[in-house]
Length: 313
Image 1 (cartoon, one colour):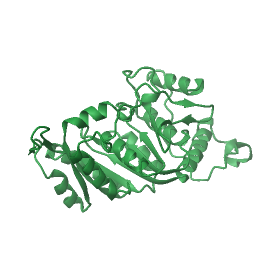
Image 2 (image 1 turned 180 degrees about the horizontal axis):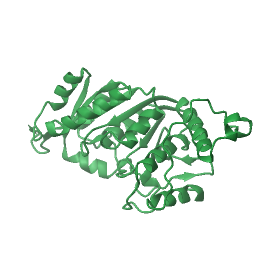
Image 3 (image 1 turned 90 degrees about the vertical axis):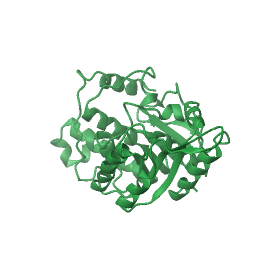
Image 4 (image 1 turned 45 degrees about the vertical axis):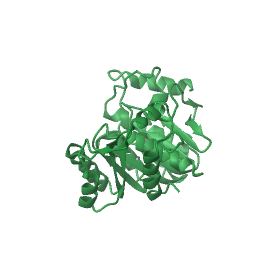
């Protein structure tokens, strides 16, 4: 990683001394990128000029991406990152060009799930290079920028929003068939920034577990998606029953049917249900896909089934 990017991160790492940029959208007038010939440049502040230029880069990146899919949940710990990682895997192994954006700045687990623990983002003066997993699959995460895996990111809202915009505008994604965005729990700065960056995204997949404690928060996430005027592609009910590794018996330890009821209430598809199987934890920790040969049949079939419904074939 270049000194410019490392110094930028180190400045942001100190929340007391960092200067938080405004998270305003760029002005509506189209930016040519040539400040010398722009009549607005004479009166614009340096910050305003940088916002315009960043918005231009962001728009250019977005134009090179055919489909954007947001993975969202109102609740933490429901398996959202597992869904995002394996959707990206599923698309890539079907010869799609895929980027996976880990927008969870405070809990970036995507590097672990993709087998990229310890990897560092590289870059030049003008761009960050996402970390490749396959020839057709690359990843960007805050986990590639911190000096140590256990370093916390202690930032206020404007800093978080600006970094998310940089992850889109200043990362050399190249032409993509799909960009899968793994969003942090809730409906705060990061989900809003991604949604605003991709106003024409294909839509969002909402991940929940069956119990009301989860679906209550996920309905808020659904209303957030509606508020930003994006389609809801469907609901995935994760941890939908525990399958015993010895006898195969299924036990509904988190109740059952919450995802289906939520889908009915919202009039959107239930894309699939995914049970709890012990090997899921091991494969995730080892950075292996749940679509691979080591995955139990019941998990591989579940992911293949809902993956078909969102374009993974």
